[in-house]
Amino acid sequence: MLDLAMNDLNYYTFEDVDYQKMKKDELAINEAYYAQIETDLRTRREKNLVNIGKGDKDDKKKIVVKLPEWQFFANRDRLIELLTKQAEWDANKKTKTGNAATVSNEDPNEKKEQMQEETTGENEKEKEKEKELNENRGLTKEEVKEKEKYLSTGYIEWTKDEYLNFIKACEKYGRKDFGKISEHLGTKTPREVEEYSKVFWVKINELPDAQKYIKNIERGEAQIESKNQARDLINNKCTSYRNSKEEMEFNPTHYNKSRSKFYSSDHDKFLVYISHLEGYGNWEKIRRKIKEEPLFRFDHFFK
Image (cartoon, rainbow, N blue to C red):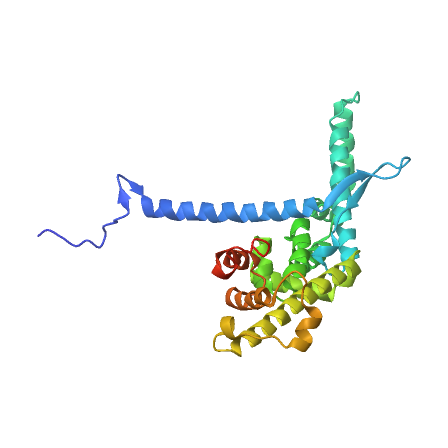
């Protein structure tokens, strides 16, 4: 009898090609690829913190590690020390490599024998230490862990532009409106803004221009508060009438002291009414409504 069982049938194999295995291999390759990209990006971000520049006129080239204050790393001085150590190791290694490439007049056989003698006399512990330093760019394993710990405490992903735009947004919207600050930045979520803001206000005095930033943000928040108070007064005024446009009246005692010489009470009443309707501060909409109002059709000065 014919065995019609399909237990041994592999639906993923066609013309001796196992597409299921191929798919698994492809997924594994993709995972390894993206893991390598993440590692490369992190290394590149760390290297961006390092700048090799010149000192004074009589100084040689020196390693300068830039670690911006606005990224708020814990134990910033120690982290700079570790990053500087790695940068100096890289620079020295590059110099040694260049020197090694220089043409030498020494007898190669004699140099080979000398190297063999030195290698034979080296201590195993020293070899391991040298290997460790090479792998970690001049740091011990303990120092690498220490560096990683401090790097994880800061906001290395925040650029200078994002930092300055964050301050401007705090001035414009207030320090607690994370949603609008996020929209202003365009690159950070409200959650990321909130997390950064908490650290920012705890450590703001570490920034060079801290007092200037505080003053500007507080001034912006005072303007926001003043605007909110004006909006509440207008809303309370208008909701106290059934038909605020027709029935609204001002207290003569207060109104006559502050009224403008160029505008009438009809102008002021309409401004209060339309500000309540369109929202206080929406000046473009309010200006459009004034132009559309029949009462001021020929009042070109007011329009």
